[in-house]
Amino acid sequence: MKHLDELTFDNRYARLGDAFSTSVLPEPILNPRLVVASEAAMQLLDLDPGEAQSEVFAELFSGHKLWAEAEPRAMVYSGHQFGSYNPRLGDGRGLLLGEVCNDAGEYWDLHLKGAGQTPYSRMGDGRAVLRSSIREFLASEALQALGIPSSRALCVIGSDTPVWREKQERGAMLLRLAQSHVRFGHFEYFYYTKQPEQQQILAEHVLATHFPQCQEQPEPYLAMYREIVERNAELIALWQAYGFCHGVMNTDNMSILGITFDFGPFAFLDDFDANFICNHSDDQGRYSFSNQVPIAHWNLAALAQALTPFISVEALREVLGMFLPLYQAHYLDLMRRRLGLTTAEDDDIKLVERLLQLMQNSGVDYSLFFRRLGDEPAESALKRLRDDFIDLNGFDAWATDYLARLQREGTADDPQRTARMHAVNPLYVLRNYLAQKAIDAAEKGDYEEVRRLHAVLTKPFETQSGMEAYAERPPEWGKHLEISCSS
Ligand code: AMP
Ligand code: MG
Image (cartoon, rainbow, N blue to C red; front, side, top):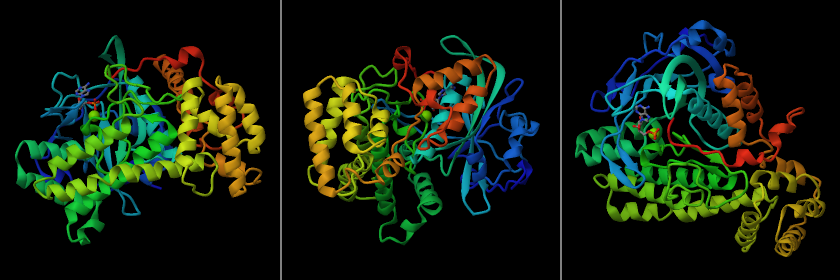
């Protein structure tokens, strides 16, 4: 286990030069203090968990101190926001402090979000508020614990720096970890600014550092694009299967690694609602829950467009065409598991879709349904769950077909059923109202609830004694929280 001053930096992205990022120093926030840290994320850097309590920890992640080997840089990128191309985005409030290489030889970007203005801040103040920093922290670590690839969060540091949003709030910084911060928008930037040499340097860098296996392929760039399509198909299947709504799927918020990235107004579904829009500013519902699938496809097409200098349009089109079938196969596989099915039958997707429609019509809690379905033998579980549905005939017909399906594969009374289903159906999810309660306390200076909620969410599949309150349906006020883009 290492101390903070023992990290090994190797800043590969910074070395690409000024066409790719700009050197900027963090602007410190006032009276920094630790709000919450993730031990699991610290382990990725081989950091001793005790380091989070040191004064220097809060100083390093609030812009007051810097490692001698760090080279803070604001990255340049562009992207499609709500369908329209924005030619110049970039890190407007975050800085890539450097890349740390751990003992296993893995590289982690240290990205400090809320670090002050940069040449890409446009009209923004360069800051992040405590509320949104806590939300990103909790979601990163909760997604990871659910087995959904995501950027990670090392810590949130709170402060007395005033920040104006709809009202005065307090500034905070989030230390984000990811193996890469390259977005679809990085490729779009060099494509639309017509800088083919720089674009090639970027592509070579990404290929060598993140897709080395593709270098052996006859067409390395095409192989890389295929892998990006595959990873995103898998990721979106996980979001849809677990009810995660990203909220701002602009191409600048899409990671080339296929990890959940840059989520602000995200939400996990409470009641199942295919049309759910978690981002209050998304009037058209472009990023509604069910639209995430076609939007991911749209975003991959935008990336394909940016790669046309390297790859033929026909080849790109063919690979892009793999997205939907790949997504469908992953999604069905995940939903079979969530239903406790161990074999595959042709009509399984219909069983899933009928259930979702019934849940939608009756406003059934998405996460708890699957958890409870695995609590006991199928027949008794179905009897208990029946009360949650309004269309009882519809539910009975579905339950009959589901039971028959289990009987055909012989798992209706399988003693392993509960263990198998509980291992894939979380009891604890990051519901908006749980995050909001923790934020309300943190804004008054009490960080205990953030820490407790974080701890609960790190073991989402295990029943934790005394934590029953975290596994309940939200109260009525908690279902209608409005989460805006402002963060
Ligand atoms: P987001 O919607 O958070 O992904 O941000 C979109 C763009 O706006 C990115 O280029 C951000 O860096 C930038 N941005 C967001 N908030 C701020 C802020 N408070 N100050 C400066 N830039 C910001
Ligand atoms: Mg963003």
